[in-house]
Image 1 (cartoon, one colour):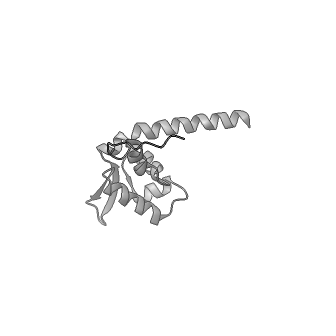
Image 2: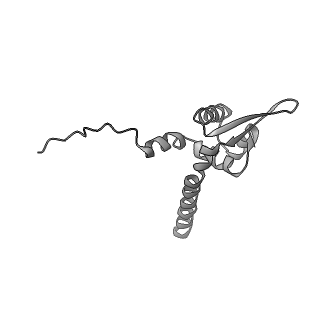
Image 3: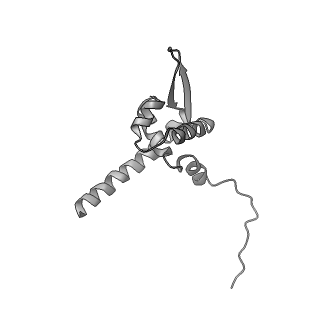
Length: 115
């Protein structure tokens, strides 16, 4: 058996892994999908995504904000409201999420035709 050769060049993190580290979390693609349509307030996102808890939604939004994908804007209302939208980086993820949604629709069609 031949020994495994090591690559002498150090590679940065794989671009696919880098992207999936952002969109790969549970509920994260849903959040990006709904924010890609229009800015949303927390309660609107919570209603958009049945089954997500407020704690998880809050954590995912904070993570996405920290990664530069989501922008959190405090609105000058009384009481103050917060609105979330996608940053330019977040908008770059939109085609990937749309492709996943298109495949999801196709899978549902295949399942419906078979069932």
